[in-house]
Image (cartoon, rainbow, N blue to C red):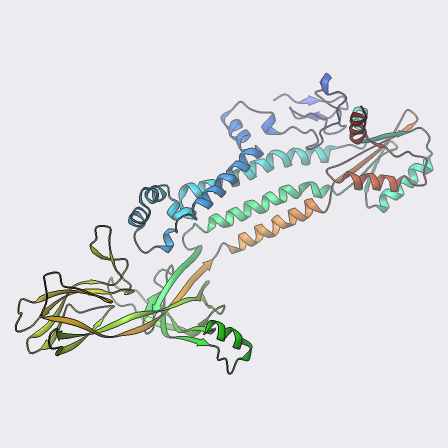
Length: 541
């Protein structure tokens, strides 16, 4: 594109409004001649407002719009809110394609098909995050590079029209060299950087604050990058692990490398006789937990194993996992997060319904029940169906919600010398159904045995460094742009007068107070706030 050469000799990029060197208005329109200058980007040429021909130009212009960036953030926030309406996939026990339609009907089906069941791992949510990152990058580059070039190219001596159309501007007819010398000293005392050219002064400070918003953008981009790293397999792990006492389970997301054995779960409560501090709470609540603890052993797999072969394990270490005292290894942390008492076995007795005579007891291991239990003398019990977590489905048929024995139910076939073909009985907790008429025999419940199950949370976060770094950089940008401001004061000699103009990106009151302080004990007059004067004139009219 054609470049624009100013009368001062500086060559400006096409689209520049104010000459980068002297500040002269390059595209002066009659209706804007008396208006104050828009100094937001120093009148520099922004690519998005200059080029609009090629496909790349149109993409650049689209993402350089602040409105587009805001809408992308709003859409992402709305999607995040919708993702909380129904439970995410990690919190359900059934396959998602079955669970959502079964539990929530047509809404659940659409919810699943649109990917809200695994919101933060869905391709379109990742795309939204990536588009926000692209918008931040293009918005920043579109503004920061022209601004940097314009501030770097600015000269001390500025065009008359530039000075007159600053918000703070004034002239002083009477002055002496001592006045300018004193003003210069007082500006230096205010920590202004002074540049001189042909007897003219440019006092500037706080330029670094102009980069605050762009430092914010850098922090946000790094933060988003850290968030997207979590979607890379192995970079972020947050999985639940339930291990029964006496059992060993594979630690998830470790590539079948580590195993955890739960030797014992310990639940300790406060004793109101020993712990007087909690006496009132114990009396009110009945029980106050003092400690949740699992005594575990961490194993590491040794060598390779064939499919179905039991892995060879080597002890790594023993540890007592407590709340806020996780087991850490190889970048992973295992936290004590929950526990439950789970049914482990149930004992029944085969009994004659009329005489209540027992013909033998059987204990069913709920984790691995046998198909047949021989009680001797021609009596036996077969398990035809087993429902660990019994419920009736929507067709009123018995089914199980999960493989965990939370609510076990059985279909028994009871065989006896009198009934060699067997009698069928459906038995659940506090419920017995005889589907083929009255039976001679029944399964009498005698007792249950429970086993503690420790609930662990397995975590690994290799993206945390990027999230923390992005947050720190973002806060630096906030502080940089909030607590400092870019102030410039131009003092020039024109036709036997001293012209004073000033500009700041914010806090005009503070700038005017500084100018007033620097002009004390001199013959120079305080410049006017032209914007305030215009408002007062309109109000007076």
